[in-house]
Image (cartoon, rainbow, N blue to C red; front, side, top):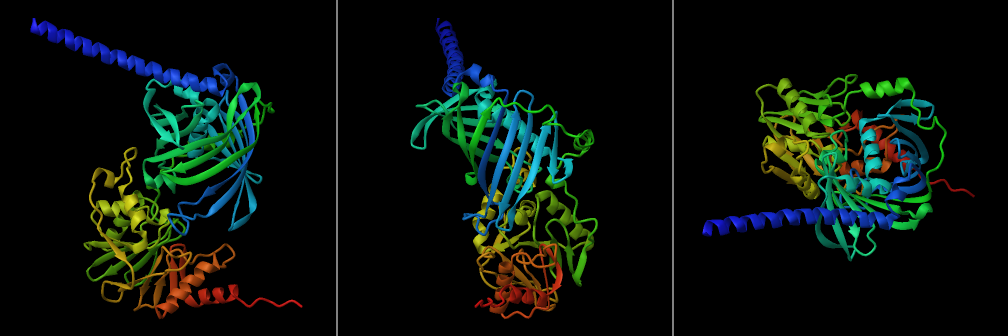
Length: 511
């Protein structure tokens, strides 16, 4: 009898759990249907076959501003976009400008039939794979299709309600293309307030270095459009809880007509896009084929690249100067150091800047137990980067977790002995506040981090940065004959001093 009662109780519990599961699924779908009704109804949303808009916005350069916490450098953009929602085709004309490029720079992007192409002036070139992926995301998750995509998700779930923007919100979770999403719906209006998408970007030099990235898109400034459709005219984008973009639609048209050839991509360009290999930043080759490594002194080798690296030989081992680009790139630098200087251990890697591409390779060194030497002010961002999850595309540190060995530099720091002895100095400038310079006293050779680089006309980029480097040298009473930097070949120090003098020449007095 007891056995029968126990079996009956188990059956009842199992049945209740199954019923609860069905109820939860049904409730989630009902919540989405309620949101669809608030936006104008399912028939109205499905009737949107095309969409065009003109808008303006700005983006924050969180990856390479003067301070990781902001304020950030800002670039401005205006966009004219036409989406063929029915056939997943896109035409986007973008103009952008920022303080170092004050004229509008136009670029046209076309997406059609699984290919991407860019028009820059009169040139038409294949687009990038990430542009196609971003377009696919737009067609599935832009406001006009977001709720319909959620409704089709087999794993749609209703989560615990939360307070956001001081308003109760219903929370839905589901996946799209294998990526988890979380949708916040205003409990009063039922309209979407925010969408969280977690994804990884192995082909992106900047945000892709952070592994699993959560992008939050916040919708606001809702307007009533033709057909009774409500649409958000403003979006605010955050990435990993940092501001990224603000964009406002000034003019919106639903179901606009477009010429038949609007989205046409030349066949040769299409084929070139389809055959190009998938880009993965970890797979970038070491160095540049047209620029061989340069020996600056015996045992000091500079490897030019998108971001340069130097290998320094000292009596007790090797120092790597900079860890840029990616963990995969660092593994190639380590292999090259072992090839050039066999049987010598790598005793440390020095990272001199807080810009993401500059330190993007430190995770490889941390995973191998190689000490990291960095500026004191950069401790928070480096620790955050080392802890960042990389579950979707695991690197060595994700699979071999270990605590990083970090030495912080807050003043003059001497590393090693012998002719390649190094002295590290914080720059403490305005633009170079999060940078430090390395000085080889025996060679009167200076490494200037990211503060000195050439423009195409051979002038120096940002004389302000160059002046901060010359001021730091004067402050530390260093005798410098030659200088090199992450984006600068070995150069006479006198050229930098002359560039500062020229930039700061006296103002002319007009009568």
